[in-house]
Length: 250
Image (cartoon, rainbow, N blue to C red; front, side, top):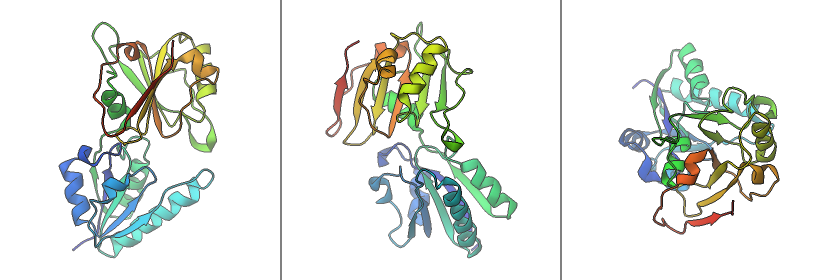
């Protein structure tokens, strides 16, 4: 049996949101390299005989950690193992999946991508926030709140998106909010943070862009940040688990 690497999206956390293909691949895996945002409930579905390796990154060690991940993927694939690279969300959305695919292809390793449900889509939807809504928003943009080197991205191209979704933007939310206001977004615009989406600890914090810029929105990572008039049209959702919903006045 030839070695093969599967780049698998674990979704936002709830194992019921895995694709059938992801479930089958996890059941057949011999080696699983998983990230920090992969939930314990998803890991419960991994083949119990598989060798599990935690490869979550911490700030300042991303480059060295990624080099180690590439080395492990190559070594296990060359030893004729069925290897899963398990990532939160979707492996091709801020997951460095393309880099790992390209590296493995250069070394003639077979790769299969198993898409996952990105939190950029799932978190707002499950919180009752439509990213598009007839007569309100016809488009949306997704951006990372941080890029290589600890910088925050240039927001000029996305600042005027009708609905803007920011991933990995919690820690720098104050400066991002100031930047977006400078670029023309209205300070009174409604925003929402969906914290720990699909888990029993999920919270939904609704505020305004001005309130975020003033440091008034208390939220912890991981959280998906949604900006736009669609937030004001948030639909009622039933409680799931012990989900708590906190709304700040605006």
